[in-house]
Length: 287
Image 1: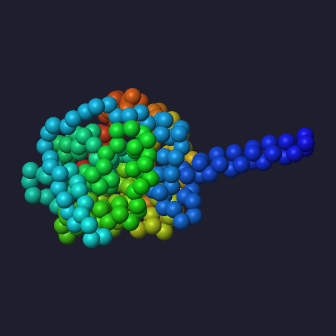
Image 2 (image 1 turned 45 degrees about the vertical axis):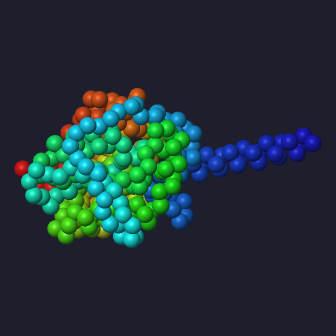
């Protein structure tokens, strides 16, 4: 009986270890058949991950911009919050939301970026098709429900909406950070800049070789999920793809740039914002 109990304990221990390793591997290598963005979405199943995202504080955006609809490449329609440039321009910034969805905080950030980037049209995409989360549980379910094909169709639709002569920069946070890179990949030769705030990098070097832009990666050193191991691997993959990567590091936690998060670090967030704006201005060749 004692031997049986010992065997059961050993088996339970090995199962627990295997489960832990599977959870951690979401950040380092996608499971077979899963994309990098899908691997990141799997983290929503972790109570530790969900618990690390406090519900956003109440906020209502009041400012410029309007919700627009456009055709997507899967025969449906997509939505985005648009702030058009005061002058005619073919330069666009695609803004991609966190796991909460296209809420008023993202609208506010879109307006802030539009003000800092005169001559650029800003499109804050809605990859949740109108749904917005107010609790971590809701956000996790919405993030996991995103289908890669649908998100790609929305991004492609937005790029077609911008017109044949458009040039694209992209920026996103957390869930949107990974999709910012995917948007740059989908833009092909029209991609001019890509900013990723603590998002999941693309793991496929062959895909990274098709990038038409360098990447600015905002890294939070205290991030348990997009951690140093993930960043180091991204550096290796970008080097193998012969693409330039700039990593700007802050001694902060995941989502430090989100003003709705209690972990918000204003000095670091302001510095990262300034660096992102300067980078986008340079790559889009703004005056």
